Length: 578
Image 1 (cartoon, helix red, strand yellow):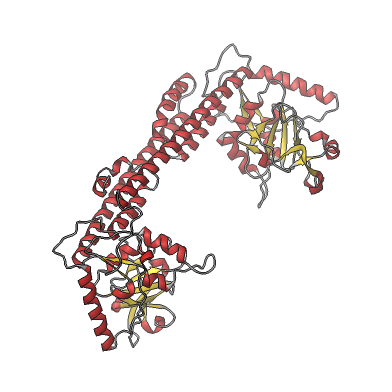
Image 2 (cartoon, rainbow, N blue to C red):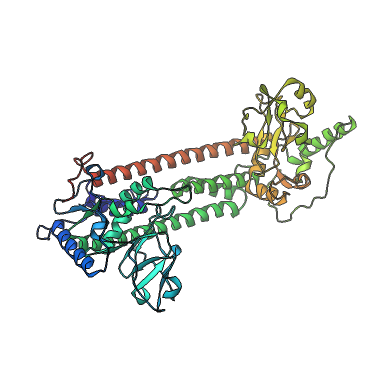
């Protein structure tokens, strides 16, 4: 695919990540390689232009306007790519004046340009403040109308901060000391700017930077003596005009992309809002099926999938995801059994949660067979992990029994953390904190609502500091509890009720009093199965999105590489400067 073909068919690959910014950089790379506009054999060659520039520099030196410039020969290995035969390799030192000084007296008002007023985007002019010349003539970088400035310090250099200074008050100015300046002689300033923003110049310059981290700078010699591809003067004008034209096209593509993304975002938001706030019962479930079939076409970014996951959980814990079955034993009968078991436990001398104040929100849409209760009503016990002072570094040993801390709870699963395991002696001391199959272990620090069900593999592991053990009767599905606690409203509730500044801790009283909607046990199992099915669909969508994104990125990069280097140019070296 040649450059014209790439630009013509760009819409086919414009969905790739950073496609338009990548195209902008590609345009600049084509420009400095002589591949953006046609060469005209009638143009005066760059070699002749260089002779005129040399003559003008001799005149200025003789006049006393500039000093005799330094010279540094170009070496063959510095030349990185081919250029047209009418072009010449040169250096900014040869075609301009590096870091000139303004020889001005008086206290006239002039322009002052801090780094914040120089922009990375091509075509966005720098701004300036008006200050007295006497105030800024010392201790700052000098420049004049038409000079080209390059930010030399990290990260401004890597971000492509550079500009042509224009519309300066009084025709001159000064600014940040973190600039290299070139005053062009008979060369178009905007073409120099194209080169300074090109990927080749930036990426090569990043390897030449000196200094410590955060204070690395591009040396003056790299700026002044890097190989500079000089086109004939008329072609410089054509290149700048074409770059401006294509950058305007990029603006249109970017605006169209943004408009398309906003439309997708609105459609997705409307669909999810309809699911979350639509009618109840069978009507909503029917709509949910329609929306869930429609939504995958709207998903183009990872955050869309995150929103879909949240919606699925929200529907699940409100009874909107699966149908209610009149034959299911209602939740009120389950609760009666749970209360009976808790009373028996109390008679046997075991601690049981005390009932607390609870008010049912009258606006709750409670499905048939469900019951609104405080969370403590469905808990058999709630136990806090051991205090931090109960465990010491010497208590841990390799190959021991794993400890489940908040960091161990990942994606509703328990993952052992290396070196967080206890020996037999410590295990005996902490026997009351052993986990049982079917327990829900929940982190009470950091991200509120992170929890997982203890499986047969983790039975006998130890609940660590910063975690809670939630234990239930057989009338409560622990997997449903995990979905319930992971739902957006629950997480927001728990996060808002946590205490602490640098380390948030879950307020257990708030957890106990948290209002929940409890479905029949049979429906709990159906909800868990449906959520798992839909989350698997989200995983597929995420994988598909990642694959599509990767494919688009690879297609874009391959097309750009072919258009930039062609079939026969790769690994070739351009002729030396004339």
